Image 1 (cartoon, rainbow, N blue to C red):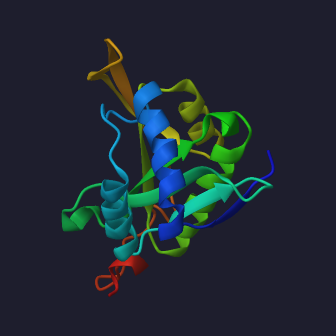
Image 2: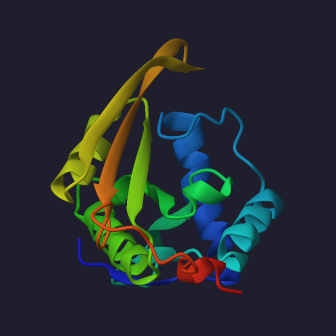
Length: 184
């Protein structure tokens, strides 16, 4: 599927909310049980973008949003500031069409430019397609947490994958350096 990637904005949130709703109700990528309402998705979007993290959407040839991705803090303690977690969600018709791969590649590019050194994927349900798209982008297996979520009547495993960005761990950051999202 040919898609166009661009920054997400507030007007995109109804479509983003619907994509996430479908994923929560029918998938295992998110361990949420009840889909959050639009207002909660607005709050989440505002928090992520206010911190300067990238949040992007993929649109099809009709300019309809078919997927979205964002990076966010993995943890809030200061030593984690060089590490981001990626999140990617697709509309059902966009799955297995290269949209997730395009979103991930763009997210990697943007996070590298912002100065982050590592990206982690926390893959709910050990979803094979998500594992495959991350592997194709160079992520390495970082671990398996068994039976970490209970959804749709069964236990779900979580796969952790990791990708070095830029110089990764080959050098220490400058003592006063911060990723661009933290230079405010």
